Image 1: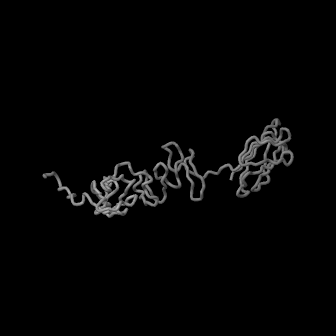
Image 2: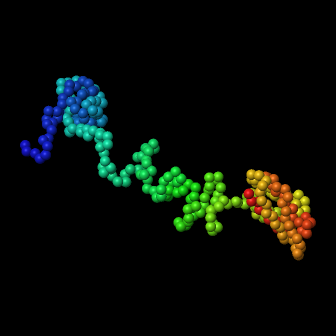
Image 3: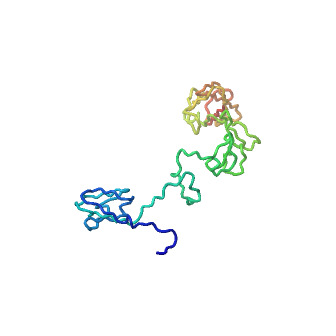
Length: 273
């Protein structure tokens, strides 16, 4: 009979196979699956899976077949085609649908080159990759929401010192206030802290004599103490606040009016280091 294309395979020689009954396992002449064969026992068609199953070239029946000669018949419905495994390096990217590769498809140990990432800037030994995909200088990021901020506006140097340029014309180390307090040392005879930073308490030693206790101690006693006081109506009196004992955990300050120690309603202390 005429045909178009390749000549079809000759299946007539193995389309049907018969076996003698009395067993439950039969060897087929070619690989098949449960879905590609029909099984008849004594002319009665059997139900796939329930009555039999096929794996490779082995057909297994659920129960032992009745004894007989060629009373077990297998009819093949088609061939099981093995397409095989593609050879190494034979599948190109054009065979993969765009957008189908997800995170789970990438092995955790995959060494993906930085050149494969979409980034801006230049990577080198002094830069790091930010979350927005931009390479930035490790020591001089511009901490600003303003895209026009200059690189180095804020910097942490090799000694871990914070540096910044806030309109001063250059970037320099910032020496912060390590402790401060605003308190009333007069009203009611009891010290009352209004607001403070890194101050745990104030000890009222005597009239016009106060010890400011730090929450976190200073690294040494070589810090700078700025002290002022006011609030008592004394006209043109000479009012001073003098630190006279500095240790890492506290500083003691004396407040005077006309050289006489006096309590004050408004005492301000700031520590710089």
